[in-house]
Image (cartoon, rainbow, N blue to C red; front, side, top):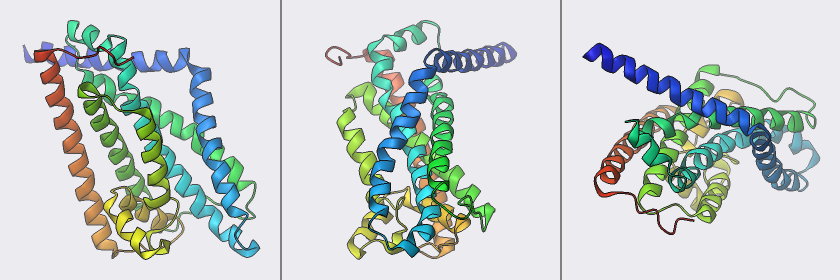
Length: 273
């Protein structure tokens, strides 16, 4: 019985992977358009800001800008392609279809990470081409690869957890797209992504430290360009791991809870369109 259940679980995972792979292929042009247009949109603001820097400071700032935009894109992709996509998933009746075949929506939405990570890879590659063309040196520096990898992995887990939590919220009340836009923009500006926490004005430092993403971002910057975290390194690592686990636990439990709730009480999808 247990062996049959395991085989059934493996088949469901394979089916979900195939679902998202097929969807990416069918919407490949839309996929590329979203990956490139998002980065072009944010690069307009970044390149505009560079015009106000002294000539000698621009070259120093380019590696930090690249990693800041890369980290922001990872977060943004997870928010839109998991949290933002859930409204489409619900209004098209996909929840009910998966209930019929006894497949968890949590499983389906979790594997949207495939789409998000691939889109981030394409967008980050485009960002590299743009920024490296302005730099006289290699912007893919890594002074301490261990901290760079640790920071990126924890940032990705945080972003996916946040996207799943937004999905759970969408099951109950929906998530306004305008709110997602505003939150993404605020995270870039005051979330310790575009600018190291130590370089922010003092009142904004405390805001950045409250935003979980600032802590893995500090690790990535330390591992790549050697900028020390605002907090002591040991505290930054501990805080990042702790917040990542908290966000992951919240995401798993909220998705499990809301799925049980909807199976029992039904989905109130009237008016979502």
